[in-house]
Image 1 (cartoon, rainbow, N blue to C red):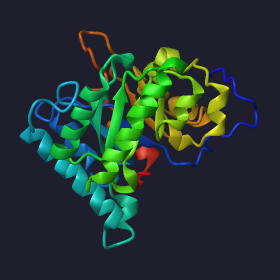
Image 2 (image 1 turned 60 degrees about the horizontal axis):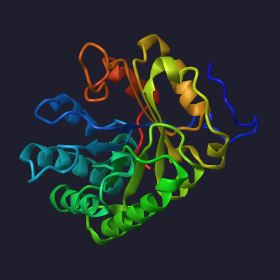
Image 3 (image 1 turned 135 degrees about the horizontal axis):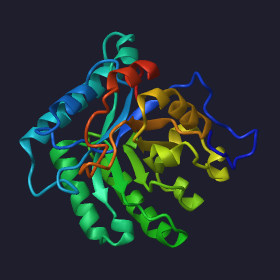
Amino acid sequence: MPYLTAPPDARRTAGGEQLGFGVPGYAHPLLAPAEWAGLARPGTPLHWAVLNIADGPGSRPDPHCLEAAGRLHNARERALHGESPDDTVRASGGRLLGHLDLAHGERPFEELIADARSFIDWYRIGGFYLARCPTERAGLPAVRRLTGTLHALLAESDSADDGGRLVLGHGTHPYPGYAEAADQLVTFQGPWTDYRWSQVAEWTADYPPERFAHFVHGVPRTHLEEAMRIARWQGAGTIFFTDRDDRSGQSDPFATLPRYWDEIVSRIGPGISE
């Protein structure tokens, strides 16, 4: 089991609380049609999924991505505003997030805002995933400026309800101040061999589980239950576990469905997004 640095009375997810999926970015809909179709399937406990055409929105609207985005948007509308209250429990209600690559703070602010506007105008996204987000205290003011502007852009659009959602893709525990700069932080991204012995920062106990996400690759089917226990104990409300890995020439283990997708969906159970 992982060693936890948090005190014994730290607030963690209880065994019965609802986990949900955050999808860091499937391959293009032409290459991963089953993956994108599955996100809109009723009963999938999806919190959000990232759309990434070419490390951003691309140079023009992509018809295949438009179709996938429209399907997910419609599924969310059905989940949140369906005629039958029971539908909101069974249906998928995930947001579509646009992928913005911060390049660890090296991308110019103007470029990022231009990409954000394209995502909003073309794909009606409901938020943004800020990949390769800085983790040090020195990078926090620039990230705060960016997230403040993104929230304003989302509030002006007609596609993002509740002001949209911003997720910082650190992949590790950042300086604690980042928790106030966005809606959710990815505090682990890596292999199962590291995750099962990972530590959680004490400061995360001051926030509820919906503020944190974990992405883990190389998780064997036989260790799914253990992986979910770790996520709950470490206070993560959003997960993506896969048995794919970054070996055998596969550069992105999160680009396709895990072979046990149906099983992990059934283990988590149906629900709606936050």
